[in-house]
Every structure is written in C-alpha cells, then in structure tokens.
Amino acid sequence: MALVLFSCNTSENASETENPTETEKNMNFNDAHSFAQPQIATITHLNWDVVVNFDEKIIEGTATYDLKTAEGATEIILDTKNDLEVISVTADGEKANFTAGSFVEHLGNPLAIEITDQTKQISITYKTSPNAAALQWLSPQQTANKTAPFLFTQSQAILARSWIPVQDGPGMRFTYDAKVKVPEGLIALMSAKNPKEKSADGVYTFKMAQPIPAYLMALTVGDVEYTQLGAHTGIYAESSLTEKASYEFAEMEDMLVAAEKLYGKYQWEVYDMIILPPSFPFGGMENPRLTFATPTIIAGDRSLTALVAHELAHSWSGNLVTNATWDDFWLNEGFTVYFERRIMESLYGEEYAEMLADLGYQDLQQTVEDYMKKNQASDTHLKLNLKDRDPDDGMSDIAYEKGYFLLRLLEKSVGRKKFDAFLKNYFTQNAFQVMTTEAFLDYLKANLLSEEFYEELKVDAWVYGPGLPENCPVPESNRFEKVEAQITAWQGGKPAAELDTAGWSSHEWLHFVRSIPMNLDLKQMTELDNTFGFTNSGNSEILAAWFQHTIRNNYTVADPVVKNFLINVGRRKFLTPTYKAFKEAGKIEQAREIYAEARPNYHSVSTQTMDELLGE
Image (cartoon, rainbow, N blue to C red; front, side, top):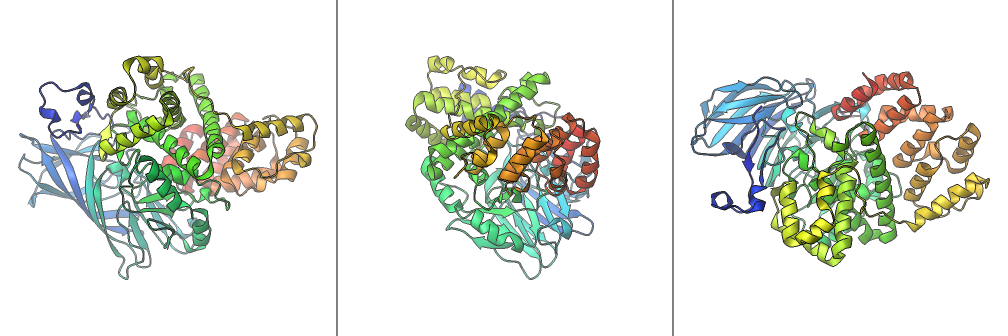
C-alpha cells in the first residue's frame, strides 16, 4: 500500500520555505486509507459522464480528470473498490497503460495509470459492480410512494471509490461537473447545483464549483419533488412525504441565518435537503448543497430538527475546513456538534440546548464505558490511529461528544465572545483547506491559548489520552432534574397517570425513558405504556430507547413493533443498540431471525456492523 505524504499548506509558498513553522510541518500528513500519492500527481477537477442502469444495478460511463503533476511524475494512483471494472484509460486523448493492484483489506485496489509530468488530463471508462458498497438500489416497495425505484450513495468514509475511481481521501479536494442519464420519470440530484424539476429525457447536468473531497461526492435518483422553504433553502421528498417534510423543516432558513451570524457567510449558495427512504444508514449526511436525511427525524412536532442544524453546521466544520485524515475525524464532528448546539440555543434558548448537551453527555459516558470494557482505551482518544482498520470504526460518540466537550471547555475558559471570534477566524482563514489535529493545536496556541493556559487545561490529555478528563464540563439541565423527580415519585408509589409531565418536550420524554430503571416487571411496563403510549410513539428516538426496556423485560406487547421497526428502518444509530439488547438479553436467535428478514433493506454501512454484532 502506498502511503500519502501530502503537504497541504495554507500558503502557496509554504513548501518553498527554508525554515517551515511548526504549523506548516504539521500540515504534512500520511493518509493510511488511500493508495493515492498526491505529492506526485493529484486530481483537480472531475468531469463525470454516466448512465444509471436500474435493471443491472450499475453505473457506467467516463470519469475525466484534470491533473496537477510534480516534476518527474510517471504515474497517478487512484482508489477503487468492490470490483469496479475499468474498461479503458486515456491520457491527453491517447491510450494509456494502467494496472489494477492487489486487493488490500478495508482499502480495495489501487489503480495505477501511466502518465508523464506533462500530462494534463486522464479519462477512465468504467462501470460499477452491483455490490458497490456505497450504492443502495431500492425497489419501489422500499420507498414511501412505492411506485418507482430509488438509488442513493453513501460515500463517507472511503466508499466513493466503489462507484468512482478517485483519489479517495479527505485531504484531497477537487471541483466537478457531471452529466447523468437516468430512466425517464425520475430525477437525479448530486452534491452540486441541482435541478428543481424532472427533465423530459432523463438527462441532468451538474456543477460543483467549490473544491470538495471524494467522501462528499453524492448521487441520488428517485421520484421526488422540490419545495422551496426559504430564500436559500428547500426540501426534496417523495410526494407522500412532501407536506410532512415541509412542515417539519420549515425553520431551515432560520437555522441558516443563525449560523451565518455566528461564524460567517455560508459559502455553498443554497442549502437543500432530501428525505431518503428509511434504509439510509445515518441520521444525515452533509453532502454540500444537498443534505441527505433519514425520514426517522420526521416526528410531526419539529422535535428532532437538531439533526438539520448539525448537517448545516457541517457546511463550515467539515465541508469548509476538513479533517486531513480519518484519524482527525473529531475536527469535523466535535466542531459540528458544538456549532449545532449553538444554532439550537440561538433559536430555542439555553435550556433547550442544555438538554441536548445532557443527552450527548449520557451517550458519551456510555461509549467510554463500553470501550473501556473491551480494552479499547485508545479508541477514546480524540486523535485516533486507524491504520489497518476500517475508518468507519472511528465514527463514534468520542469524535462527536468528547470533541464537543473539549470545545465547550475552551469556551468556558476564555469566554464565549473571545471563543466565537476565534472560531469565526478559524473557518474564514482555513476555508476550503484541510486540517490535521496537530496543525489545529498549533493554531489554538497561536490564536487563543498561551502555552501555560494550554497546559493548565490539559488539552493534550483530551486529544491524546483516554476517557474523559476530570475538567470535562458537566451539563446541568433544570428541566431534566424535574424529570428525574417524577421518576423518583413513581418509584415511590405515585401512579404514572398522576405524574407532572405537562408540557414536556421530546427531550424530556427521552430522558425519562432512558432514566427509568432497566429491570421493571410486567405490571410496571404496562402501566407506563398504557399511560404514556411509548410503544406507539411517533418519535423514533423515544421508541428506540423504549425498546431497551421492552426487550430486556420481556414486554412482548411491543415485539411486533420492534420487529416492524427493525425491518423498515436502516439507521445504524437505532439498529446497533436494539440488536445489542436482544443479544444481551439472551435472545440472539430472535434477533437473527428478524435480521434475516430485515437485512435486504439495509445499506452496506449497516449490514457490515450488524453482521459483526450478530455473528452472521
């Protein structure tokens, strides 16, 4: 495997400096998850011309790249995966020799193409395999309308290489144009400037003028329609979901305005979202200009829209300033969670945001405990070492929540006004650049913390050490304290129907369900369910938390609901704890039986995790 030593200095002349600064030194990095050698030859622009074939479940066409080459370059190396078939290659219009290297676990196969240091462009004619890990092909029955097929991609972390031969690392950025032919009656959308209506011939063209890394390449094809929500925001959804989605996400424009007030101008022109079928494995994916979102956040009361704020925040932290490698993933997610909660606080108040932080703290404590039990203390570091592992292993609450609490500590220590100015400058000065953990720490010391204050806050222990440092800020939610008081009253004998729950938000109900004792008898489970209707909740977060109790306490009334949920929802956040509850309750055969029926509905991102969990 070829390791990347890729200098991504923010100054054009930095690489020519005789005595580089520490920050410049720390912007040289190895990407253990790409075969590419961008210091020799790198892609700068993609022109993608393809046909989407639902019958054969393949994408076929040509990827043409503009190149930047170093003196003496003899080849460019791209990443491929999952039997992506290269049919022919040209370099500056002439046939070029190419070699597909041996398969490497987690990474796929390198594609080496012969060039010279004068080569300006390469073209690769290829087709994907039906088992391309990024692609999920859905039958009409797997969609909301149940009338037309659907396709969506999920490229993060390193799955773009399964549908495009590309330099697939977060530290390599390029612009792109595309022409995509799809069956008539369907619309194609990408992480680019998108159409608002279907074309008569099924041909669509796209342009992404801002440079992005390969993991933000995205395509979806389906029978969806567009609804304008605000001056810069809108929603794509199947017709049966349009009204619900338009209501649920009506505040997207307000979120965008709030975000710009905090950390500067939104640099992607429009912020649209598409509601995908329920098999989508994540809550959302921050594809530029078009967030992909799960329908499980449609609760009917706008209670789960923090996810929208999260994906919007990625337009700054992640899409604008990007982690250099997947070992630096916390730079994307920790910053985004912090930004998300600031947006929610701006719109709904401090108490609301503090409830979100408290729920995140609960998740973080559980994640740390789980890793420690498995003797995986190093996975609780913010800066990871994922060499020879799937980078998906790093996508845990550590990056999200431990990263958030470090930033919260910094805010608390220097004051919000000073910290906001620091973050705004950070996003502005490093826009469309990549960032390593070490370079960020240099930036932090140069622009916010003295060496002494840095040491006093034990920042290195946060970044390179296990668990939660003693100076971790602890959220204090008065509203959650009132919830806990009601649980205490119920445990003391007060009937559930007499508890003071009037006006509770979904976050308070989620805290209630999470905080009630895990070992309840049938009478207690029945009382709670009959009073509060948890088994029939329309809120997927509450429902998934309730399943932890129903499975372990043999509350069989909920079994059909659990099964239906697992068959129809592919969001990994819910699948993992639910199947795990079956396993820990000694019901693994029941879990495997459900999984056998549900697995065809899941994306590969989810099946990979569930296969390992259930020993399939």
